[in-house]
Image (cartoon, rainbow, N blue to C red):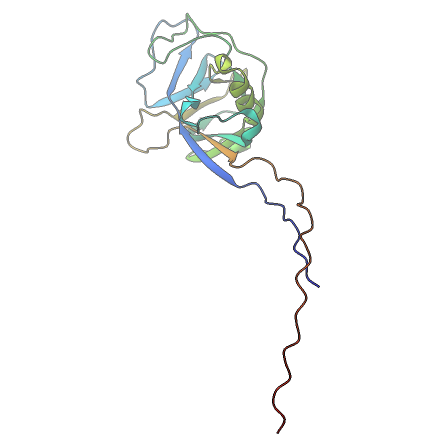
Length: 204
């Protein structure tokens, strides 16, 4: 007797790569705008800013759909020693309007980039899963991220979207669960019908 049982279907994942929408550098005390430069600079006096538009995600995407999220950065050059902190931006800014005299507020560090990872001409990814989930839960909180350091000897340059020579602009790579969590095991199906004996054949 045969019986059919329900099967659990694993969630299928799909990846979304969101290019950086805005990127620039704010230099302390300077009223110059750096939005058109081909790099984002990070040093004790320079803070890098990056913004991402999540409206390109599939309609109805929520925090529960996010499996993981990483920001991808291309380090063009790194000099000195020290770490870079990745922090959420908590105040409004624009690429064309940001200067060192109107720098927005930022939150606590969510990740730290070690000096051994910031090698010249190297691509690096930073986990920002919890931050992206928070952005999806409260869209108004999506004001981007900032890259900063307190080490006086460190200075790094990261390719911006204006760098047409390399095409290594930052991006936000998000892996989504496409169909939600797996459902419960289905009920056992009915037994298969019993086979019937055929009629005997002719005698030889």
